[in-house]
Amino acid sequence: MIEQPNLPDPQVYLRPSEASRYIGISTSKLAKLRLRHNRSEGPAFVKLSGCVLYRRQDLDEWLSRNLVKA
Image: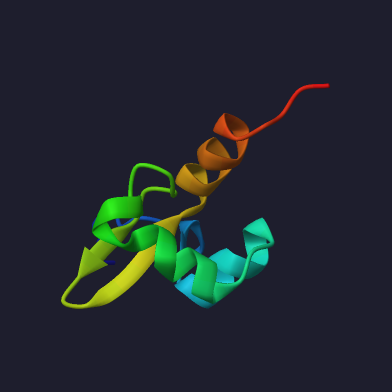
């Protein structure tokens, strides 16, 4: 048996359409948050060869940072 390298779990990474559904905002708003002048306001993302991916952990952290307490 050939041992497989330790690859990240593919379920942890979401495409923008999946990420927008996960956090409940539109894909358009998510795209606007990726613009250079808005990046400090949006969740962290990965960009590889033009492909944008979001880690679920980063989306959860972003939601927590934007929590408004009563």
